[in-house]
Each structure stands twice: as structure tokens, then as C-alpha cells.
Image (cartoon, rainbow over all chains, first blue to last red; front, top):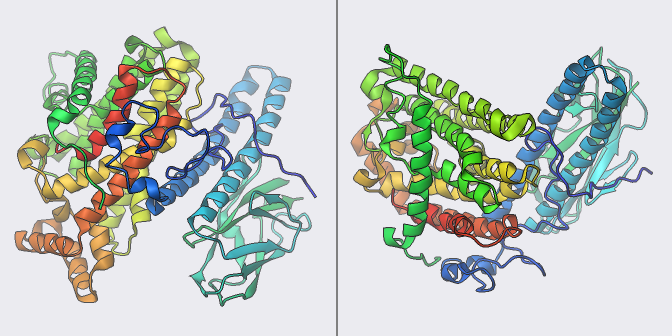
Amino acid sequence: MAKIRHNSTGTEKKGPPHAAEPAPRPSDEPVAGEHRPGDPPRPGNGVGATSAAQVTPVFKSFADATSQIVMQAASILEEEVAAGILAAKQIENRFIDIEEMRSGKPDEILQRFRRDAHELVDIILDIVGAAAKNASRLAARAISIRTSGSIAEVAQTPVLTMPLPIKAGETGEVALAIDNDGDTAAQPFELLPTDLINAAGGHIPAHAVQFDLKEISLAPHQHQRVVVRITPPAGTPPGTYSGLIQSNRPDQLRAVLTVVVA
Amino acid sequence: MVEAGPSSEAAHQPVLERLRLYHELTIQTLLRTVPQKPRAKYLWDLVPSYPLRGGKGFRPGLCISTCRAFGGSTKAVLLSAVALELFHNAFLIHDDVEDGSEYRRGLPTMHSEHGVGIAVNVGDAMNVLSIRPLMENLATLGPDLTWRIFEEIEHMVRESVEGQATELGWVRDNDCDLTVADYLRMTLKKTCWYTCIHPCRIGALIATQDGNLGRFNRFGYYMGAAFQIQDDILNLVGDHKKYGKEIGGDIREGKRTVMLIHALNESTEKEKLRLSRFLATPRLQRSARDVRWVYQVMSKYDCIEFARSVARQLAGAAIFEFHKAYRTVPDSEDKRFLEQIVMYMIERDL
């Protein structure tokens, strides 16, 4: 089983906005409203900063509970930053290919390319890990995804890997299981795929990913099997491609989907 | 209900003074970027119109104060602040055309006074002008930093137009099934990146050259969203003389504010149907009576108080994130200003 590591350097390298930013990580990035030892003074607790006392009455109720609105906003921001990272990385890779190739330093470029590719994967995994953990704070998660392909856990986000490489134009499939461990029925929801990308900037469009179930309903303690089919378009260059499968539920149930195109 | 703090202008005087200081400095420099050509009519003579109408100067204020808080100089950041202000004013001109607004900062909008064609062209000109100060950064900041600022600006503008497209699309398609989460995403893209997040990021970038810019994302987002919601509230209950736009204009435009979204979600089927019909009516055919009725529905479901509550929660979160984002910098007037401006954002009346 592949071990997946988090980007733990906490540094930001040069690049397009958000391209190289570590995503807010659960371990060191509490969302406002959630206080941890060593945190800066929370608005309203009257400790530390000179002006904290001035805002005490304003936020006295805020300080007592984590705000659903703020948690929702934090999740939206993480999603948008993640989308920016993917787009920016693709642009950056094009710069590497074109501009620096012309400068006549192919070995240096290749090294940088490899480094960026690894960082890209780390960043994506950091983000999905953080998003999953934040989502779990919104409410006790009753529903989870289990994969029947190879599994690697990144925080609470499963990685769903196609068991065998697929040739461009052909279809591969893998099953995942969705469990409702709660005592209440889950509202019907859909699974939505994103584009899959590889380190060279190539991509497989989202519409190449299909599910055998359009809408998923789960009774209490019910398990549902969903088959994921992917057909990389003819001409898709060989490589390892990754993207997200995400539900349209408020807690944004999600998994990383990885496929090797032979 | 959360208790409100002091709301008088006097309570926010230190914030207002610093905003004014940085805004004036920015506008003076901005005006020097406007070409002085003999044939300036219909274009360059109109460029100063919006910048000279006042405005609050949040963007240059956040950018300059963040740079200074992190040990940078006003001189180093000024050209970038000018670019932000030019982009902002270009957005405003185009936004007024797109929304069909009549007033901006107490005066007729550019297109009301000079026609849509000229207004759009003046907005275009201001977008072009904003590139020049960014290019001039090269001489003082060097190629690497200059390029990184360009990258920040490129992302900022792209997000803003995407957010604007979302909002315009909601109105065009008469989308009545929106949630507060939809609003938060739209306002992140349309308002927050360019009003708060990138000004702070750019200021810190110039001061530190290689700072951890991600720390400003949440701070700027929460503050910007609170700012936008307060702006929408003022459009309903503000003083026209202070606010400078037509009160209730957002209802007439069918703008999807937190108040309208809450009203749509809370209203009865019959009320929602009438709201939907009102929003489907071409703007010029929406009567004052119907606008008043929409306002009554909003009152019935405490939509303004709901929006205020959302804004306060976001402002509280912004102050929390402020302490994380700026914890490494020593106390200074600029740092205090940055903390205090959050409360001003939700308590302002203009």
C-alpha cells in the first residue's frame, strides 16, 4: 500500500497565487470559533491584544459556539483555493515547458518539473484531507465511502484507484461502497466528478467519469455499492491521472480517484 | 441576538483617518498616471471622475497598512495600491452598467451621465492604466517581485469577473433556489479576493518578499464577506445622502443578496411565487409598490437581522483570523488599524 505523506514544510515557494500554498491543515489551522492551546486570543476572551476587550460584548455569543456559517465559508474557501492550485499549476507547467526549455537548461527544468509534480500531488492531498476533517467538524459524519480498489487513507479521505491501467479509448471500472452508519436516512444525493489531471498538465475531462447510480439514497445503516467507470478519450497521453469524486451533500463527502492510462 | 458595539463615526475615527490618509495618497499618485493629452475629451477627462468622488479606500488602505505592518515602506507598495484602486474603479463603472445603477457615491453613474458606450470605454481605459504602475514596480522591486505581484493581480481579476458572471447569471436566469452557501461562494469570487484578500497578500508580499500569503485568505474572506453583506444591508436601510446609491436599488435590480435569498427560502409558496414573478419582470417594469412589497416580505421574515447576524459571525471570525495572520508582526498603528477596520466594515453607515 502506498504511503501518502503530507506536505509538512509549511513554506511557500514562488509561483502563481495559491499555486504552492499549503492548504489549511487540520493540525495547525483551526477554523474561527474553535480554540486551541497556544492560539491567538479569541475575540471576546479579553486576553492579550489591546483591542480584544473592546469587542467582547459584540462577540460574546460568537465565542460560545462554532459558527455554522463560518465553517461553511471555510469549506468554500478551501475548495476555491484548491481549484486555483490546479489551474495555476497547469499554467506553471506550461511555463516550464516553453519558456525554460528555450533557455537551454533541460536537466534543471526536468528536476524542477519532477519536484513540482510531487508537490502538486502533496498539495491536492493536503487539501482534501483538510476539507474532509473540517467537514467532519460540521456534524458527526454518519456516511462514509469505502473503496473496493486499493485504499490509502489521507486523513479521512479515501483514495480510489483503478485496479488496472486502462488504454485511452477503453473503459475501466472500480466499485466503491457508501455506508450510512447513522440512525437516520440520508437525503438523496449525487456524486460529481472533477477533471483528472496528471503531472504533465494533461487532463481527462470530468464527463469521462460515469457512475452507475445517478442519485443515491441511503436508509439508516444501509450500504450502497456504486460502480465508477472511466473512459479516457482516445489520444490521452499515458500517465497517472488524479481527480476528485465529490457528493453534492452539504458535508461534501469525497474521495480521490486515480487512474493509470497505459 | 448579538449586542452591537459603538456605531458612531467618532468610534471609528482612527480607522477613518488612516483610510483617508492612504486613500488620498493613492488618489494623488493615481491621477498622475492619467495621460494629459490635448484631445482628452470623452476618455481621459472622465477617468478621474469616480476616483475623485471619495470612496472609502479599503483596498489601498489594506494593502499599504499590511505592507507597513510587516515592515515595508509606503513607497514600495504605493504603485501596487494605485493599480488596485484603478482596477476597482474600472470594475465600478462596468458594474454600474451591468446592474443598470443610477447613482454612485452620490452622483449619477458614468453611463447615466455619458451613455453606456463611453462608460464602458472609460472602464476599459482604467483597466489599461492599472497595468502601468505594476510595470513601474520593476525599477524599485525588481523582476521577481514584480512578476509575483502580476500573478496576484491576474488571479484577483479573474476571480472577480467569474464572481460577477455568477451574479449576473442568477439575475438573468431568475434563479430563486439559492442558499447562503451559494451567496458566500459568489461573494468570495466577486468581492473578497479583490477587496480584501489580494490587497493584504500584495502588501505582505512586498514587505516580506516571500511570506506565507495563504494566512491572509481566511482573514480577507471573512472580512470581505462581512463588508459585502453590510453594503447590501445599507442598500436597504441606509441614508441615501451618506450611502450615495439609490436606497432599495438592489431589490429593483433583483440582486441576490443574503436578505433576498433568506426571504425566498422562508416565504410561503404563494409569496415565493410572487417574488419569483417580480424578479422575472424586466427591471424597468418593476413598480415602486412591488419593491415596497418585497421589502415588507423581508421585514416579515427578519431578513435584515438575519443578514446582520451572518455579517457579525463573519466579522468575529475575521478578527480571530487576524490574530493568526498578523501574530508575527510587532504592535503598530497599522496593525491596530487592520484589526479595527473589521468592526468598521460591519458598523459603517456609508
